[in-house]
Length: 265
Image (cartoon, rainbow, N blue to C red; front, side, top):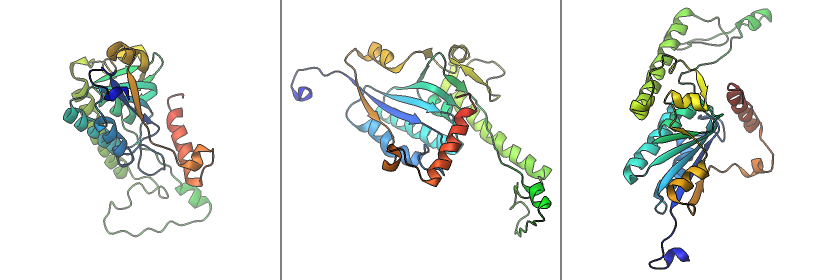
């Protein structure tokens, strides 16, 4: 009731938006703009927060979903004139770093994995397996590029070139976002945009982050020892809270684990 008593000053509140996991469109529980939109809106609009903190732990994923989520954060930050601070836990790589760069400031742990400003496409080829087992792939298309990179057919050089062109376009978009958000703070090291990753202080030296620290000490230093946190996080389905998983959820968990494993986590 203290907050309603006239002339009594209430401590500032910081909205904390947790962004943890892979960024994608297909798997249940992945970070997507559609799933996060209500939480992001509440974080910026509910009450009068002094700032919004992004609690990030993501190895990346879909470039489009990363862009949509980051753009929503920026629109609301500018509309509400609120500072946004990203706090990195284990990793903010690839799309995870895209989200971090959407903040006005990035703080990480000394051992956080930062960067991976690149684009990757992974698939498999099973045409040799089909040949060995006497299986024939039959595909009929209207349009010569309709079956590009069919995993059950031998890889075509022209398909690979076309894919590389698409990846390069997305990479340029990623680089543009980082340069626009980091501005003069960003270093000019030639390896910045090669997909390389760095740990804590080295990432700070390169201008990818602004400092080393942890959320509570930083927020208390800036907003007072009585600062309040109002947390927003996507809720897991009830069966997952009790350790149960559906087949699709189990596959999604394996895929997400593989994404984190790329960075030794």
